[in-house]
Image (cartoon, rainbow, N blue to C red; front, side):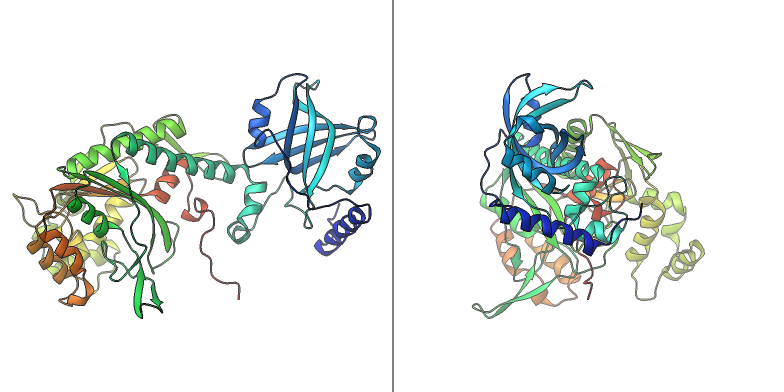
Length: 484
């Protein structure tokens, strides 16, 4: 049967709304006392017990003298049974005016149907909100990807997979916070608007504060403020934060994203690697039930399995590059550009040696790595805030944790020498002093203890543990290009 146009469906619902109002019914009700969210009410089920539940009508089956309705929220669903003879006449008149999508509150007695379904036998009910637009088709849900992201509420109503992803995201963030707090970390908040955006190399979003008459930038990282707290005497500190980078959007990049940064005084990058490995394994066990994470396609077929079983592999950056091109470090810069062209990589004349090498790493190592890999002793040019290795000054004591083709977490032995830090920042900024944070350098001059630090891309971790293929699938309201 062909479905009626949307305008006609809305018109029918509006006539029902007007009928409710004409009968003295308030279609947008007030408070309704419940025994908790739908899943909580279902958990309290006991034969003969009287319970109060409220939710959206997601199924409506008219049996003539009786009706079965499903009420749902993000936590679950509950079946209710309405017998025409067991409710008040005024309530009976309301039943034909209800639609799928409406919110109602129910007072009912627990019983189990012949199919063993826990159900509430309705004694009374109240309309709490009349839905003027029909929900997506129950069987087909939302097919248009753009609608899924622009109207996430419809996606969550009609797509159980999306619901589960965001329930898991909530649990993952809870487990991160709990794990760190149980290990002696203190959670803090640092400024999201900064005079100088520091802590990473990225294009910031710019804004203006009228009262202060000054430009400000949305932070690209909280690192420099968190290190100032190490100076202040915080032994273990972390922040779960929102960062903003005015750069490209892709399946793995969002201009606004969630990041964990954590620092431990008197530590180093090796201990931070141990910390992030243990934390991710802990989270996987608690949220996913194990360390083998299956990624499936739309038909449910397993396309890859990520094995998080420790210990995780470690390899030097230079050794990984040599596994791609054995004589890479003996080649001149022009030879490396020719080699890249032969590999199918673009290497421009403006790119420096380390940038070309990093392109090789990203294409042939990072993208092809599935199980966890700590890439250690990275080139110092890539990590200007990390401490130089004592035996090889060309590299820093740092790791990049790569899982499922993407960097999940960087970790450093933090640079705490203010003179070396100044030289690194001057180099990174091209000698433009106004582009780096003098307040941070001043703080270092008061003395920062040796420390280990790590970042963890929370959105990418959620993608890893849920099998989501796009970062937009794990962000409730991802940024989209304007329809206009």
